[in-house]
Image (cartoon, rainbow over all chains, first blue to last red; front, top):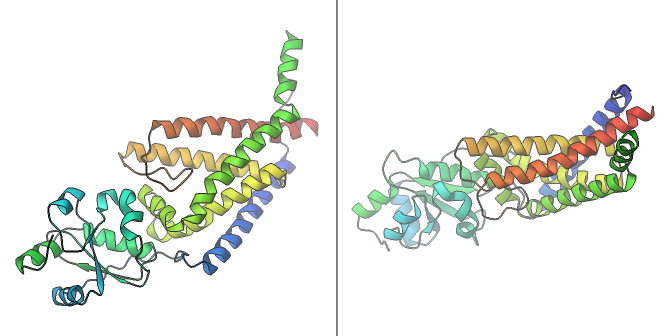
Length: 153
Length: 152
């Protein structure tokens, strides 16, 4: 008994699977474009930085949400007053909790510790990819915040 | 012996068995897609964490994949374009298993994102679970493609 796959069946399966994928793409983009929490199709990855003086100004005017990208342990020890914790290393675990209630157009300032620290940059790029439109990085944020004796908790 | 083997083949090719497997996999795919459709940002984050795709493709996949799953699941249950649907579920299972193995090999502590976007870490269990479902989809592949070929 010879077992073989009929070429007509193979061709049929390819056009059927292509059609299923095509229909899925059309519906997916249509739904994504009309829903409020839709994702930006092309994820942006442009880090945008904020100066210390601007960050300080927005802090006192309560016009920015500060997000600490350091580890949860560092955050528990001390952090910028009112900052939320979203450790880049465990972003998967804390993402939903940390971003709960934040509107996509609110100003978010990410920070970590040290001029060469990349956690805040990675986190910023990630949040932009997730649809937050106004995310800035405060370079060396934790160190300069402490040096200037600004509110911590 | 021939009779026993013949019965086994008839049983494996039994329409009710095939229908049951189609329903199991169809419902599985529909179930797996719902939470991802409801929480697109969380799912995009999971796709991002796998660190397999370039950033530019992360959101595109997060938008499209759950809809491919749900439509394939529905078509599988309803018997619409069955050859195409079976081909897709086999390719998807293969991709998922490779992605999980690759992530475990790289030591990533990430959420599987297999059935929902909730917390949890990938483990050997996810591979074994996907392999068991994959065996069902391979069965469906053989009965769908080879059975049709034998009839021609």
